[in-house]
Every structure is written in C-alpha cells, then in structure tokens.
Image (cartoon, rainbow, N blue to C red; front, side, top):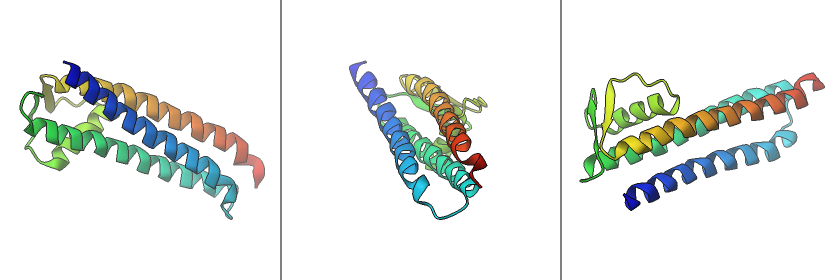
Length: 141
C-alpha cells in the first residue's frame, strides 16, 4: 500500500508542477508578446489545452505501464492494452467525463480517482487564470 501512495503522490506532483510551470511561463511571456491583447488570450487557451493534454498523457503512460506490471491492478472493458487506449481512458478520467467503457481494477483505482480530482482542480485553475488574464487585457485594445 505504501508503493501505491508514493506513486500516486509522485504522479500528482508531476502534473501539478507541469501546470504551475505552464501558468508561470505564460504569465511571464504574455506581456512580451507583440500582438493584440485579445489574441494573447487565444494563445493562452491553446497553451492551456496543450498543458492539459500533456498532463493527460502523463497519466495515460502511467496507466499503460501499471496495467502491464504485476500487482498494480488492470484496465478492463473496452481496453485493448494499447497506449492510445490508456490515454483515452485518462482523458475520460481527467475531465471527469467517466464514460465507463474502460474500468480500472485493483490499486489502479486510487490513481484514477486522484486523476479526476486533479483534473477538476487543474481545469478550474486554468479557468481562473484565463479569467484574470482576460480582465487584465480585454479592454486594452
């Protein structure tokens, strides 16, 4: 059980750091862009989508390898054991969509629950960030 806790903490820490670094770097880059202020927000949206996609891939890769490792649990249902299937499952968990066509079993379930919670928090963090940036730059043009 200790290994499950440590792995879950490490994966969550990694995606939070990725997200933090994206937002930090975007905050530093935003004032330096020599484009219309409103267009900066479009770059922010695309950048945040890229950050979220990277975070989903982190979880997907972890699911892919844990499914193949003994003692961590497995993914079942419409899961064919391919990396893209693990990433697809990660997207449904991260966004809290939860279609239910792929089901986690064993200790893997804990990471899935944490991914949903982390995805919800990180998506909300992004929405708050973009809102603040929009209020800062919206009327500047």
